[in-house]
Amino acid sequence: MRRLLIPALVLALAAAAGCSGRTKSADTSSPSTTGAADTATADFGTLKSVCGKGTAKSVTSQGVTSSEIKVGVFSDVGFTKNPEFENAAKVFTSWCNAAGGVNGRKITPETHDAQLMQVNQQMIEACRTDFFEVGGGAALDGLGVKTRLKCLLPEFPAQVTSEVGADLQVMTQGASSGYAPYAGYYSWLLKEAYPSSASAVGIITGDVPVTKAIAAQDKEVLTALGGKVTYSDLYPAQGVSDWTPYAQSIKTKKVKGLVFLGDFTQLAKLEQALTNIDYKLDWVDANNNAYGPAFLKLADTALSSQTNFASIDGTYPLEKADDNPATKEMVALFKKYAPDAQITLPAVHAFSAWLLFATSARDCAELTRSCVLTNAEKQTEWTGGGLQAPVNLTKPDEPVKCFNVEKATTSGWVPADFKPTDGAYRCDAPVYKYKGNYGKPPTLADVGKSLADLK
Image 1 (cartoon, rainbow, N blue to C red):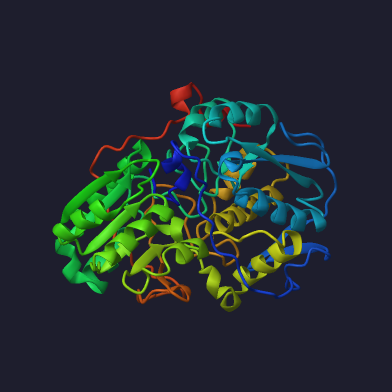
Image 2 (image 1 turned 120 degrees about the vertical axis):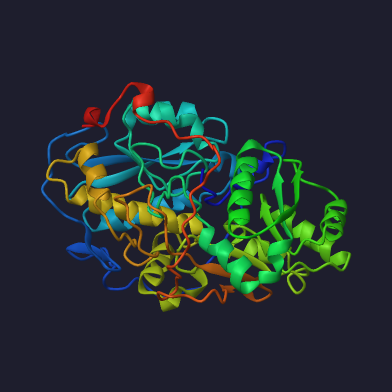
């Protein structure tokens, strides 16, 4: 399990609260000439000829015709009312199809709305119609993995809540199966930024299985890095009306650094309660679910007292889009094809996944699932054209070395002083392999299949 944007909805099983609203860029530039879709081919960032015209081919696989590729996009939009994955699919496919599609085939995205609890039902439907699953995610995604593997349906997801590293899956941010993905971030907090905090770290999480398992992983890695967890607590999934008792407990335990796993609306309330009793933490790990303007607005009065950070998975900061050609280009494409959409961190991950799919499919003489998956797994330094730090996709169990950290301020999110080594990223993260038993994702063998069955 990897803590990739812990969905707020996981903690809202008893109260239908949506996932976080996240950042909306203020960039007003037009699409760059390299990203324009009215040329013979469409380039993006450092990726050349991502999409373009071609001679129509015969039917080669389910979801593929001579003129169309049907690709599924999972989401919980019916529950969260957050269309971030649909928006990313709309923007990418509109741009790509305007340039001719993938070798002449237009991409048709099909949303599979799991509405939180209907993951497996939607996966069964996807198995009947789709060629691939790209750029999506569902809070309870683990419910559909075995069904997906049984029908040999590959995926390039935008985010995974559980079952990271499952078969027929490529993650553009890297899976790091079995390794702590935030070892670099926590090492920076405990050993460099706030070394005195290592003696008193707290963890508070929503009382649901997903976040409790993540809390156990975080406790293990924090301890291994020299931290001492002196406070741990759970809060009800539906939220807390009065966070003062929790704040008092944190103060009594003299907690200096706090890891918060859950809905950032609840974190904002907790921080206000801490501020009200005049207790200041050295740092709060707000987790990257909070990366965006909504948390800043909710926590506004507490931000002057509490110091919040979030690790954003080696993705270029959205608020610095003008400084990075690929991010700026993506922002311009959103403005052109979905001008009212918020650009979120998961949406950036989704866009990177779509780029991986299109470039992998483009290079197939015969468009098959096996060919697309194999081409994606050949990428040794995938950056999404410059949207993120390089990741080796040939080895899903390889630890990710690059990370970057954002700090919440009253004027917005800004890069923290985490001592980058490679442009916007720091690529010297320590490697930590989990020793605890946190389960393993299903494999093809578990459902009586093998890679040889993939066509």
